[in-house]
Image (cartoon, rainbow, N blue to C red; front, side):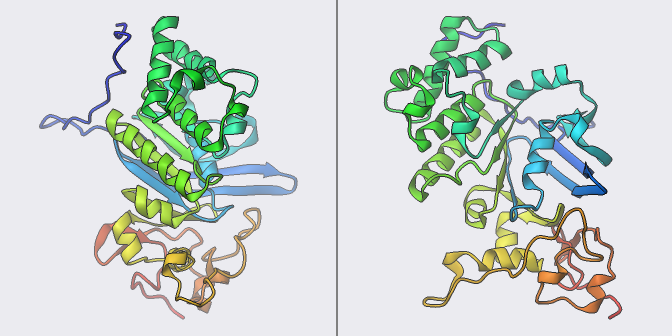
Length: 354
């Protein structure tokens, strides 16, 4: 049914499942996913047993250094990597109960934009510099809804106004290169929400922005998500952003999830040495007058992962036993809580032969 041109698309609300019926599935359910990129004489093991869930209306963060597998997880969640460039060794990606790894490209084109949307790190490369802002938004609306050209224009201008843009009509008729970085990112948010997707993936959406604009953009993102009931998966290397914005956190390293849990639990009592290292590098946690802490070394080569724990060569707690534990150690509950878990046998109290 066509929506009135003066009303936004109705937000999705998460209703409780009736008694005796199954609960609503996660909007995103990545289960034990193993992804490889074939290369000459081997393969890059980009994702190794990754399991991540995002519930309807939830804001979840994935945090880690460059090379940890965050962006590959995001790209695979929307099937943006061409099939010929990767191999799925194991696992699945379910979007609202449907395995998108089995979906055709035609089906994915329908899902992208309408049911899933993505905000990229640099809006200048994501937006078409040869097309005006309004045309780019209305094209998406026209593709995924039955709104007329006039209604699509009105909706686009309304979305820009919701992004706290003072003159949305002027911005609607502008080219991306005529606008600031912060304004372009607001446009990307408006574009992503143009069809009220159930899931929005934001891949480093504020990295290129200064701190003040970064906060404004994140507040707009959260405000719009809560208004529409959209779930958000935020990809970032910044623990400070995750701690302020997300309800739950997944900490990734070398293609694996090293820790997960409610944001407050992970920040207050990090269970993995890698998580502690990320938190220790925050300026707010530094001793006044002392140099910032840093994690020594580099993320291992994913085409040649070391035996045992992938983090052991950078870990101050490592022992000889760390080289002999399973390379894909399962997450273990912290302090008896299954919600907060870490993949480190030393910090969760599990014993191993030294």
